[in-house]
Length: 101
Ligand code: HEM
Image (cartoon, rainbow, N blue to C red; front, side, top):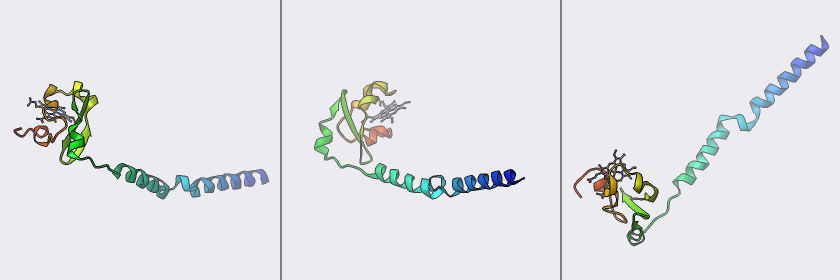
């Protein structure tokens, strides 16, 4: 009987530790998510001149809606073929959204 009570207390203690351990709390995850969100949000700026240097099939950056994308690894896979290179190193917003270039 004493053993049963002891075991129950131990189990209760174990569960309490699990419950109140900060690592298992939602707020802990939230803080972590927030931190990584901030990392993702950190952005770099490029001048048009700098982007224009990356205008080759083997080094291709494009600008879409004021954001710079390095699409080098996607050039060969692009379903629209080499059209992705039409404005390589330049603003490709219109072409990307299917507007006249
Ligand atoms: C995120 C992925 C993609 C990126 C970054 C991308 C990028 C581009 C860009 C920048 C252009 C226009 C270039 C310009 O005129 O300046 C373009 C054109 C085009 N893309 Fe994509 N593309 C993507 C995905 C796709 C997909 C999934 C398809 C088809 C299923 C596709 C089909 C086409 C076609 C058909 C054109 C026009 C071709 C032409 O007018 O000759 N693209 N793409």
